[in-house]
Image 1 (tube, rainbow, N blue to C red):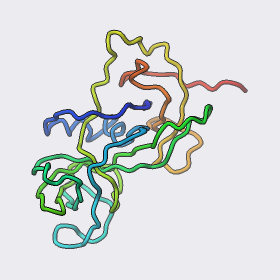
Image 2: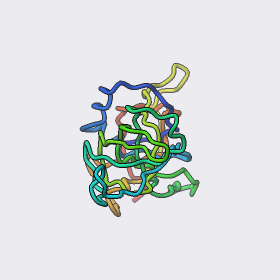
Image 3: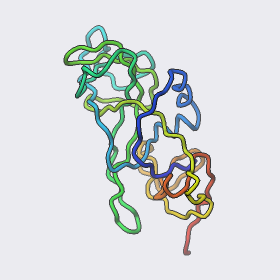
Amino acid sequence: MVLTLATPLTPLAWAADDLNSIRFGDQALAYSSGSIQRSTPQDGFVNVITGDNQTTGDHMILGSRDVLYLRLKNPGDVVPGDLFTIYRRAYKVFHPITGQYLGYLINRLAVVQVRQNDKTLTTVEVVRAYAAVSPGDPVMKFVLPTEEGTAPDQNSGSDVEGRVVEFQSNMGLMNMVAQRNVVYLDRGREDGIRAGDRMDIVRSGG
C-alpha cells in the first residue's frame, strides 16, 4: 500500500459510524500512518497520567474505553462527545535527491472522545487506539481523511512520476519494505493522485 504526501487536513463533520471506517484493515493502517506535513494543528496535549480512579497508573499503551486527561487550549469550546486525535511528530523529512525540507512525518496514535470538560483538564475516553500514547503528545480536533477526488481541471494521476521519500517511522530502522508496509511519496492530491491508485515502484541504475 502506498501513502502519498498529503496536503493539510481540513475539518469535516462526521457521524459516529464513520469511526468504523478507520478501525480495521487498510483504512486503519492509512489513517494511523498519517502523512508528511509542514504544519499540523495543535489544540492541546495529553496531560500527565496521575494514576487516580480515572486513569490506571502510568501505562502508555491504551485501548478502547481507557480514560485519560487532555489539557486543551480552548476548553470552553469543547462539549461532551467531541472527538480528538492524539498524534506524534516523528521527525523532519528531507527529499532524498534535492535535500528540500518536506515537513514532519506525523503518526496518529489514537482517537478519543470527550466525556467531561472542566476548567483545566478535559476527561476523554479512547475509542480507537493504534499505538502507545505518552504524556505530552499533541492533540487536534478529529477529522477523517478528506475525500480523495480529482477535480475536473486536474490531470489524471496515470502519468505522474515521483520518488519514495520515507518509510514507516514506527517499524524501526528500515532499508527494505514489503507487502503492507507503508511508504511516503513526494506526490499527492494536487498531482492528481487519489486513494486506491496503484503504482509501480522501480529502481533506476545498476
